[in-house]
Amino acid sequence: FMRLLTQLYEIYSPSGNEVRMVEFIINYCRNIDCQFEVDENNNILVTKGQAATYPCVVAHTDEVHEERPEGFRVVVDPDDNDIISGLDACGECCGIGADDKNGIWVALKMLEELPVLKCAFFTGEEIGCEGSRNVDISFFDDCRYVVQCDRKNGNDFIINVSGLELNTQRFREDCELDRFGYSPKYGYSTDVAALKERGLKISVVNLSCGYYNPHEPAEYTRFSELQNALNFARHICSLTETY
Image (cartoon, rainbow, N blue to C red; front, side):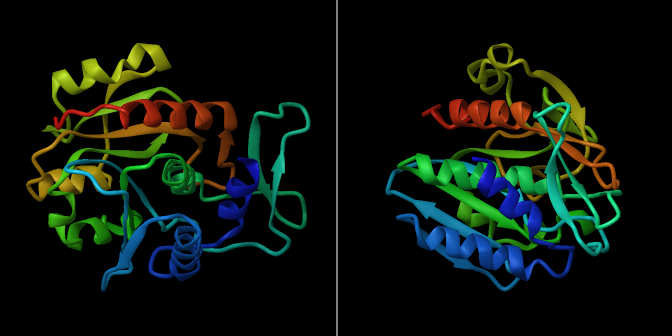
C-alpha cells in the first residue's frame, strides 16, 4: 500500500503539466484487466468489467504546488508512523500533492480490487475543474453514483457545495456514515460538484481522505485516515442501487 502512495507523491504534476501522472495511471491500468481511453483534455476514462450499471470513483491528476525542490523525498515521521510528508534537501517541509494523489491512490486500489468499476481521472481541477467541465458526460450514463476522495481531514462526507445538493438522503443512509466515522458537511467546488452543475442526475459525494494543510509546504497525510477512506469508498461501491 505504502509503495504505491510513495510513487504517486514522487510524481510532480502541476496544473497544466499532468503528463507524468497521466502516463503513470495509464501504465498502471495496462496491468489491470480494464479498458481505458484518454480524451482531448488528457482525462483518463476507465471501465472495468461488464455490467448494466457501475459504481464510479473519480480523482484529479493535478496538484497546486508550483515547484518541486531539490532533493525532494517522501518521509514517515519517526515520532508518529501514521504521518507522511515531504522534505527538501535542507530538511524543510514541502508539499507532497496529497490533494489529490490520495484520491488517485484510492481509485487505483479500487480498480485493482473490484471486478466492476468505472473511474475517471481529471486534469485541471485546481484551476477551475477544467477536465471535469469538458469531459464527455455520457461516460456516467450507466453509473449508480460517483465517489471522489478530495477533501482534507478524515471524516467529512460532503453533501452540499454552494447550495448545490450533491446526494440524496437515501444515499447517505445506505452509505452508513457512522460506521466509518464520517459526518455530513458542506464543502467547496471539486470535480463531482462540477459534474452536478452540468446536470448529472445521480448522487455524488466528496470524501475526506486523510490529508492536512493542503496547498501548503507543511502538507501531510495521516495514513490510517486514508486507509479508512479506502474502506469507506469500498463499502459505498458495494451498493447496487442507482441513487
